[in-house]
Amino acid sequence: MREGPPDEVLAGLVIWRPRVTAWLGGRMLAANVPISSGRVTGKVEQEVIEEVSITVPRFAAAEPGGDVFDWRPGANPAHPLARYGQFLDVSIVVESVVTRQVWETRIGRYQVKGWDDDDAGMVTAKGESLLARPRDDKLTALTSPIGSLKSEARRLAPAGMGVAFDPALVDRPCPPAMAWSKSRIENLREIADAWPALLRIDSWGQIVFRSPLPEIPTPVVTLRDGEGGTLISAPRADSRSGVPNVVIASTGSSAEADVQGVAMTTSGPMSVNGDYGVVVKEWSSSLLTTRAEAEAAAQSMLESAARPAQSVPVRIAPDPRLEIDDPVAIMRGDDPALWGWVTAWDLPLTADGGDMRIDLAVAG
Image 1 (cartoon, rainbow, N blue to C red):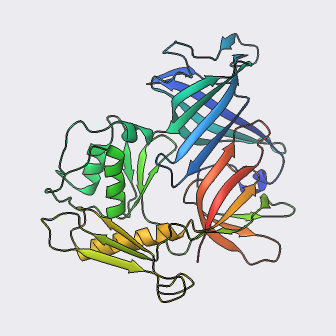
Image 2: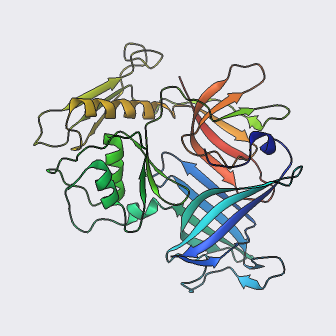
Image 3: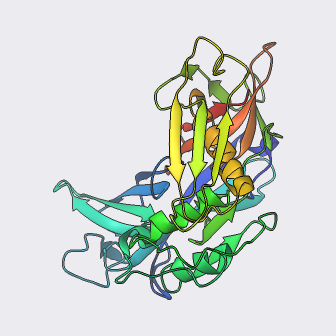
């Protein structure tokens, strides 16, 4: 969970201000993009996970009393909203009406991918998280591993892009006989799946490898309805589509002896021994060299695939602290608490805050 205002402040009266800063390389192009509306979204199933969309009056001053600026990029490659390497830093500023204390929560860094002029006085710019860089920056020649999972992750990242690792992840050598594909992001995902780990992006645009989520979440925040709460609605949903109860992970290298790990659901409504039936997912990687590695990868994939199946699409008062993988609890009246992990979020970038939406993958 990101740093930010405490629960009691978000449940009360606050002043909410989105802040967007535009950069090109290390040069600030605009300290305050005067947005009229926008959204930042994150979804764990997306290749680049996070996206942003902002709408700006075409002619507006960046600061009250300042000079009016034309926010349509046109052909200007150095314009704050142009698509020539510009990126947007997005933050949310929350001020307590009672204490006047201020919190600024950094949401993320987004590469501008395009803009649109609606010919009615508004300009919309859209961007993606910096995971777009390893997606777009393909390797120009085939290469094989020369080090460990950590060193290869750093080597495969685009130039100048940082990579961080959860201290709980145990490094191990990569088999030198394999070859990476030309897609950097596919290689990074293969490293994450084989480790096993979670491939994510942080608010500064750094690639992050996190440890797999635990079987039982420990909530970092509890969303409540009623007086003093921030929960608005939490309907339930469930889906069988694409949800396996058996995962088989094996080596993809013909140079290795047969290595295979199998993980299966053996209890509950999705048990392989019950009426759900058997739904198998197969995955292979040359990074798997032992049965223990294959079994760990299979178990992690089985758990990750099951989480989005039963979800709670939640509407809440906006909370800039929440992000992908956060464990959250929901309390509705006298009902038993629901626990789960955030798999998607949709945060408004408007002066009144609006409603935030999250998808919560229910535990158990």
